[in-house]
Image (tube, rainbow, N blue to C red; front, side):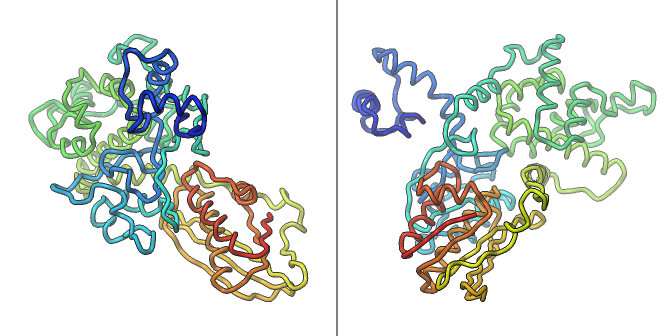
Length: 450
């Protein structure tokens, strides 16, 4: 990442000429005779690869099924099954080359519904810009030492994940309570690891029922490990993910050992999905016991991810600002100078439909409305991205209508500052920022304010 960002530094040019003249640093080969500095860089490369995600530009460099390019906090890689002999291999094939927008028909027909919605919400540039690797551990997209440190902590767990000693169990409990999942799911996961769920084995042990066998396969005893993972009826669920297929190649003593293996091997995002899926399996099992309508078994994984996505979206939503945080006069619209116009823009989020809305209104110095615009868009994964979309629409709207001398006013200090400084950024919404700056350069007078 450092080598990608600081392309003009002399050291980078020397390293590139010597060690990776025809590829990127992430594809460079190890050299046994490399310098100490080069070996140190190569030693840290795996960390950068694990924490980086692609920001979609034109999509030509991003492989759909192999690369990490989803901006969601819980899943960066595609989990939708790859169609046999799929002709679609790169993200560029999902983008309409004329409109520079996602080809909705192709996206919706290729991916699972929840994943299609995530893709359609990824911001795209109106111009052809290159794909870029950014750091996924910070909101700015720039690498920070503390975020790299936290990623290493996530990846460095006990060498004996199956150990049941006090230290290992303490790590498991700490891991569970740190997951960004609903509290009821954390509590369920704790009970599952503690083997305190009312499985048929536990109920039989307490002389409540006579038969401890699983009601689904009718062969094995239903303990926690079997009910949530090892029953043959659940294989369709777990083998739908790459990490699930990897884990299926091993056997575990109990559910605690399985959880420790996942905690030891995979990242927090996979662990959170695992937690949500196991909770969904248990919920479905209880509904089956009560003869209630059941969800299709193949829907458990996508439905669990949808629930996790909804939970994270609600957690990310900022509470409304108290009216007392700003003076009353600042909440009132102020007219521009005589003969000028002011364009106000804003965004809103509709969590119930996974959409966002943008609005623009242009008024003259008398307060008369000259033009207005409103539009619904797929939710672009952050409040800031919605504001950027609104700013880009405002500048393009004003340019299309022939306005030239304008004051643009929004309520996001973060976005206004980025536009005022004419600076590119590595966030997921960096491309719309660049678009807005480019459009504004075609206007004679542009003043941005809060």
